[in-house]
Every structure is written in C-alpha cells, then in structure tokens.
Figure 1 (cartoon, rainbow, N blue to C red):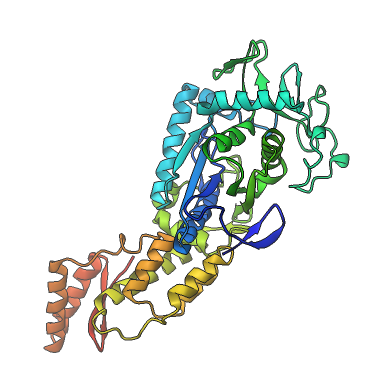
Figure 2: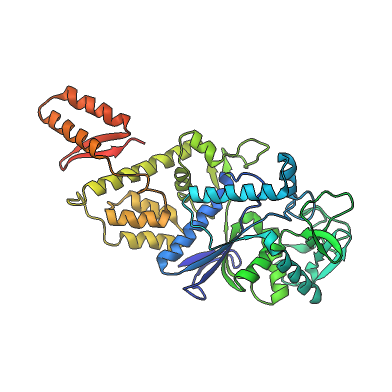
Length: 452
C-alpha cells in the first residue's frame, strides 16, 4: 500500500507498526454549526482509507476529536471562541450548542455510511491532560507567559518550520495571524488563554490561579498522547491545517515527548461550489438535508466525492451531483440484474477484478480508477458485495428485491405480451413505473430495474 505523506512530500510505501492496531487520528469538526458538504468531504475520504486498510488485512484503530472549546474565529490566537459565538447566536448555553452540533455531525456520518470512530474525544474531556502537557512544556523551557495566556516559543524548536516549509524570517507580524504585540515571535501560539476582565467566556477552568481555557492546538496533542501514544501511524486532516494547526501540533508533541508525532500525514484538498469558495456569507453552502430536498441521497453525494481524488481540488455543482446520482442508479440496476441472472450470467466477471479494484485503492486511494474498472467490466453478485463493502454506497440496502405482487405483475405482463395483448402489457408497465420499476425484455426473459 502506498500513500502520499505530506511530511516528506512523497508517495511512500505504508507499513504499519502493528498490523493489528494501526493507530490513526482524524482532526474532527469544531461543533458550533451544522456541517456542510465541504466539511463532510474529508471524512468520506478518510472512511475510504479505513476500509482500504481493512481490505488489505490491517486493523485500524481511529480516534476522532470534537473541538468543543478553544477554537477562535481567527483560527489562531485572536477573536471569539466559535462555540461561544454559536451559543450567543442561538440563545443557548455553550454546552447545549456543543452537544447539539456534535450529535448532528455524528448523525451525518451515519447517513453517509461512514465507519464510526473507535474513540470520540471531546476537547473538554481532556483539560487535565492538556494542562499536564503545558506544564511539561514549561518545565522543558518551551513556554512563556504574557497577559493573555501561555505561549509556545517557536524559536526554541529549530525544526518548527520544517513540516509546512515555512519561511519564518519573512513572516511579518499579522501576515499569518493577528499579531499580539506581547508575543515574542509572530509564529508563537497560545497553549492556554486567560480570560480577560469583562470577557464573557462560559467555558473556563482554573490554571495558575486564573480562569482560562485551552488553545485550539493543544487538544490534539494531549488526546493523541493519552489515547494512542507516539508515534501514531497516520494523521489525517485538511490542507488548511498544514501551516498552522498541524505545524503547531507537531511542535508541542515533539518538544514535550521527543518523538515523531505521526509517521504519515494525509491531507485532503478543498472543494468549491460553482467555482467559489464555500462560505456562509456567500450563501453557497449545502447541507445533506438541502441536497435531499432536491432529490439526492447522501450516498449520491458520497459517490460524487469518491469519483475524485482526495488530493485534488474539486468543484461541486448540482449538475455534477446529478451525474453521480445517475452513476449510482446504474450500479444499483447492474446489481439488480446480477441478482436476477446469477443462475445464468450473460457474462463472467474477470477473475482479477476485485484484486485490481483494491490495488487502485492501495495506490494512494485512487477511487477514480477503481470506479472506471467497475464501469467497464461485468460484475457478478459476489463482486458487487465486495464493492459495496469497500465504498459503502448502499447499493444493496437501496436495491431491495421486488415484492411477490410485483413479480406477479411482471409475469402477467409477459403472458400478455405472448398473447399480443399489448394494451394489458402497457397497463402493467404503467403500474410498475408508478412503483419505481421498469422492465427490460432480454433473451433470458424480463429483467426489472429501478427508475430512480
């Protein structure tokens, strides 16, 4: 199996430390609003990663975090906490907001047939672990304290800029973060934020005799250390995490524990919508519910995502989603045909088709190639089962067998055609169409298919 490692900028052979316990960490959402299709794309790709590892014979163990405190609106060290902002907008408590949107996100994962994480880690459950980590970094000389918090001194870690290939000498104050003049360097980042006089922040914990809350980055390091241990095998996230969040995460962990945080880093690219960046202010976001209102299943969207590669920037449009829906319908109908013809298949599946599909995925998750193999080869029932296990597109669950009453209608229609009673045959055809079925007349007899 080969994966593109963001840390080395190379495609590398992946061999886990322990095939029976492949340690994976996925950066989860900040739970302050409804996740949209842009948010969900990465989790679809990482589900494919897990299923490919399983099909290869490995046993992945994945931890996914839910950020329910500490992620500020600037994505750095300034601005309002996103959970606090969401609570004020809704007139609810921060705890209610975090619970509501966490539940929503996990439901969307289920709607997309994504494997549940082995461990869901909420940032607020790891406050003691985060404080312990900050104390360790302080004891090792990597921190300093200013008025608004405790910061990591990036100058103390010579390799700080290596992961994202940052040019620290040319990072001007405010170019990468909203610069706090008390900070020693523009790249320094908050490990802990103190609540200032008059600041309304409901989530607060006492540390060093002052109320405060953790910085965004510290949660991932403390969760990984407590739940997985360094080094992990694979760390996943979006490309937007590379220059700040993941760079800072690596710095904290390596400074504290003296080990590589992760052997492999996988990052997925962005999707745009109709050529524009996804933005609530532009009003161009879609939730799965909004797509369903237009007649699309969440699994139609999942197939659209998997038609592309996780490293490629994608543009989403309703027209493209309609094409993905048509492709999924085609596969469901091919599965229905394979089910009906399993006793006398018109063709035979190439013996190496399953092997070639898996080989495509083992080559840096090349699902587009895998899909083309499915499109261009006859697939028998056994291989459709293999495909549905790999991609979890609901081909079987959304393609039930017809009822005895429908079978009788098809039989009656066939008899009417044999008697040249085309009026009756046409009437039955209309009845079947009202039940989302059509019938194809083949040398093997009538074959029913779904209309949608």
